[in-house]
Length: 497
Ligand code: NAI
Ligand code: MG
Image 1 (tube, rainbow, N blue to C red):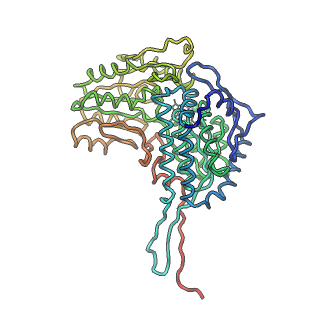
Image 2: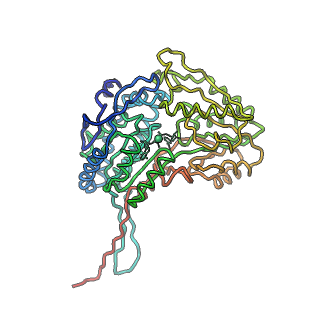
């Protein structure tokens, strides 16, 4: 382990910087915005509000660097990424602490887990160099007809704040291995952990392969999307921003992958072990992350025969959570990311409470430490009595709020699960093998699981249907499909002397 740098010192080192062409660049004359510790609402530092000119510089560096990077053999690219992985691993505690500071995520249950998932994802990509294979086609005996996989060029990546490092890995990993260079725009709320990880990686990668800039969405993000030398966009965030990105990119006719929101259904039959299903709901709702997850099982359909018992046990589980200082080893849950998200979630909770027949089951206790009194802590809330048509069951809340809906008829519950604009994830819990298989075929979602709610795994394609997005991430196939261009080559083998 390297000696751990205190998060405060690190932020001082990183603030008001972008990372371009291998170096941290101080943005002296640039506007900036404050970054908060959401557990106290103290400002921890300033991050640059990069303008069009800065985006342009970053893209130019990436563009120049790509000319050489694409010629580095693919295994060597993987070897360099593997060396990054080793270095990041040595700094994992430092990255986890920095993440907890700027996102409010609990260090033990969330930040360390994410740093480890980030490193694992990059390790997975580092081994994919030799998978960049093409095909041979038996077109004509006198001709050699092949396809090869080429990099697309400069990739623009835009990430949100909820799992910044993991999403960084899913974007830069495939891009870099496939011979592209990257300009990544961090999220306004969480710029520092991503910048620090990129700084470490830049001690190993050639200059300009990985550039990270901080800025807002409508200006900086949009400038990245529209820049003529950016040849692919990979975006994770809200449906609204995703649509805007897609529209802008369509002008340039470049490929786009979008990983957007969700309103995932979990269907629990009455033949299951209730404790196991409750554990699954707990994990899938990411209650330890204050529910800030795109795949959160925020609509939990429980068979009427076990509904009351399921609710009772889930409440018991939530009631003993320690919601407290994100940096404290004993905290199970930290706080939400920003006042904006906090208020948004409170609005939804109010709407729910004021709805007919609704009952709000608020669980756990808020911290009583006076230092945290301004912190954005929210108690988990389970709503019962709402129909699937209700606003809380149709709109993404992105907070620790789940709706429990009782069901009796299997066909009806499948219809209800599919009755949403989203289609990211879904789960069926049952011991009836035929029902489980039937459900996985009928559920309209990109990621469907039986009797478990595990999170995205490197190697398995991840991405949604409907408004949840376009394209997949996290797998070998998605690297080939979304981060390379397939070129067809025909060589005439007959002599033309
Ligand atoms: P957002 O979609 O506005 O921000 C995500 C990223 O997109 C940030 O880097 C932001 O700067 C960028 N961005 C925003 N507008 C853009 C534009 N017009 N062009 C280019 N880039 C743009 O998400 P926000 O405001 O932070 O959260 C709002 C809601 O979005 C959440 O409550 C949640 O429902 C959803 N969301 C979904 C996420 C997911 O994992 N799919 C992650 C974060 C938010
Ligand atoms: Mg936004």
